[in-house]
Amino acid sequence: MKAKLGMSPIAWWNDDLVELSDDVSLEECLRQSRSAGFTGMEKGRRFPDDPSVMLPILKAADVTLCGGWFSGTLVDEDLAANKDRIAPMIELFKAVDAPCIVYGEVGRSVQGKREIPLAQKPKLSDDEMKAYARKVTQFGEWCSEQGMPLSYHHHMAAVVETEAELDAFMANSGAGIPLLLDAGHLAFAGGDVLRAIDNHHARINHVHVKDVRLDVINKLNRTRQSFLDAVALGAFTVPGDGSLDFGTIVQKFADYGYEGWFVVEAEQDPKPNPPLRMAQVGHAELMRVMTAAGYTVETQGFPKG
Image 1 (cartoon, rainbow, N blue to C red):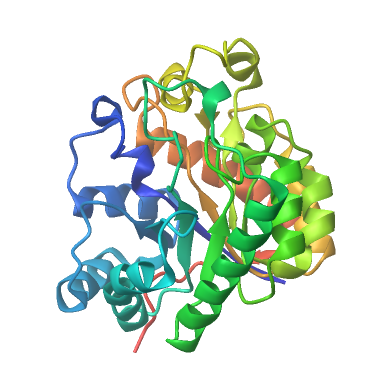
Image 2: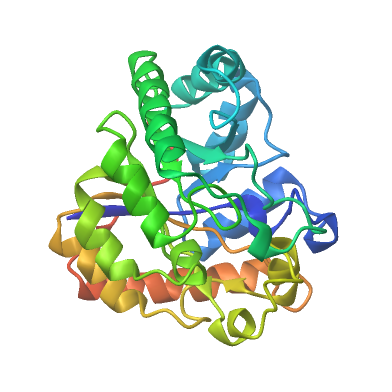
């Protein structure tokens, strides 16, 4: 089985908490992640939107674009508005041969609002969830028809956060909307990562290997503290530095024959957690557990030729 290892630039630049950002260029971010062994990077705010500009940067760094976040609003807005907003991103991702676009629902979400505590996260009724899941499926089918698949990201403080919400979303959506399984977000929400893989492996097309510090999460006052408070306190980290057993998690993916990207997405304060050092820790741990699970990790970055 083959796998690829990527990173998210959120370890270097945090869009929601600017104070948790390292003042480095895109080129330096790519250089650091590549030197740690990662061959892919998801899109961040310092990436150009013009493929003729982006491609030479990726090629020089020997890194491929392995995904990127789209802020979806389908829980409140119509398909047409979201199609209009994502269309340029689809064309960009096709031009640089990215594997998928990560769909993150921001409608009603409090994930970017530091003043709103975790306990006030939005919840959908059964009927709302059914309608929402069908709508996202339609959107995923349309994006795939345009040549770029989506990957649905369940997320803390959003309408699909808990394992029960993920199960309901998956039960009412279709194959047209694949799933991004994020171990850290599911663990933070109190879910069982291994059970979620068992239940939904057939639709998983992208994986975020985010680790968590459960000692930080367990001390949170969710009636007063927000998702961004948790991030600032250090709720997330890279594999090998947190509480999750990625040996067991990666083995579970291997048992189902998953092949594709495993992306480290670990937003935290770069001062006590220098991104390069954390990238090295995460890569070393992933190589250890992936080798044990029987994966061959691809070492080539930007496609040759």
